[in-house]
Length: 334
Ligand code: PMV
Image (cartoon, rainbow, N blue to C red; front, side, top):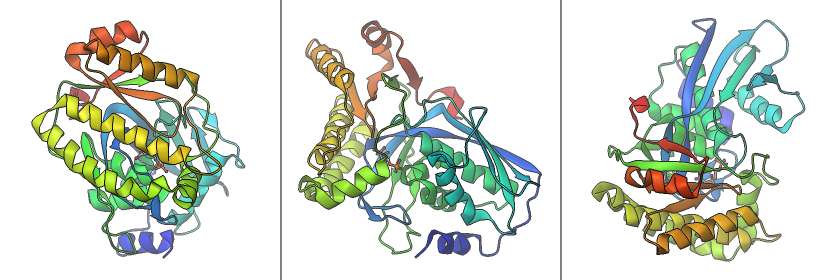
């Protein structure tokens, strides 16, 4: 099945005439606590397992979309026009091609308040905000499951950025992936904080798409990954429901390190951590020994995301000055 078939299925009876001239939408980035790693369908970005994330409230991407009279697309990222032959433009063009109904061309301007492509799931917020902008431009009035499915066609983790708070992506069983979308959990947790510990803003050397494929193909450890995810999901769900922070932190950190273990055991190996990553991990473990309730998670990049509670904000900042802290259930979320 092709991505275009899914778009046609979802937009079957919807308008292909733009309503306003332009539309704008925001989507938060999301950080997976239980990771999505490995696909069962690389064309439709269908995952091998469920995953669970937390959306970072006001940290994300705002995308504005308009139809241009020009005969080519224009992509702007943080006020910079992107060269048409860049990896960014090519990936976006592939996605936009799914939404060319009368051979129209689009001007897309994205502004992100998170470092791009540094393993901070910026593509997730990008694709999610773009699909919300399409929905507004054509007045499709899609429901959140449909938005989530369309965002997934751009980037798997984007399907979770449709929602705020804790989000669960159900892997689904159908070959067309119509049951593979994200749903929000009702639980909130006002004290929960995520700190962005950024050492490296450079784009990653190897993208998650390729890294996943290589892991699935060559890592023997990956065979056990779905089993661990199933266990971690039910444990973290319980931790969220009971506000058991220690358990949430332990499961998240263990899950992230296990995902990286599958990459280390791929061939050629994939190593996203650098010296600073390892130093920060050791510091976190040392602080924990001293009684600070601080955990981390790590995605496809060297940077870490710290997990802690509001009551420890000052102590965490003391040890990691300049840390960017997001209170994930802050008022901006409403
Ligand atoms: O959606 P992608 O292709 O950018 O992959 C995301 C992979 C991880 O960030 C490492 C894990 C996750 O669940 O977000």
